[in-house]
Length: 135
Image (spheres, rainbow, N blue to C red):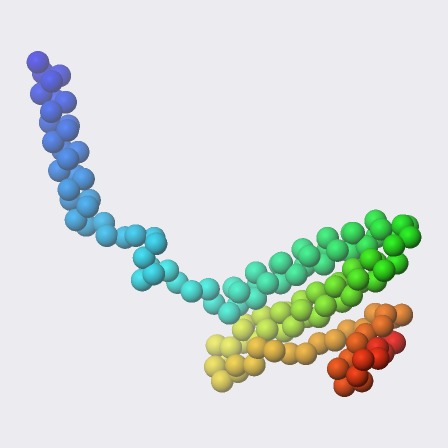
């Protein structure tokens, strides 16, 4: 009978504990009040990691396909690689700006044009109309 009493006592204490826990613990991780937005620096770190991963994979794809006779596909890959590298440079600059934003809160510039050129590539430029320019 002693074991039955202790089981009842344990149940009562658990029930009492859960009542207290429900009253005191109102934290819900889905509640927007408890969610902190990512800082500009954190966002740019994520973007940089994504661009670096995409660039690495695309460079691998280009090197594996270099021996194949698919010049049109390789040119497309190189073009995408170029744009990813531009985006990476812009993200690196934004990260650097976000890291110094505490010192200069007036700095709201998020876009920095960066256009590296790859030798032998043809690029379209809107100022030159429909023709492409060779670098």
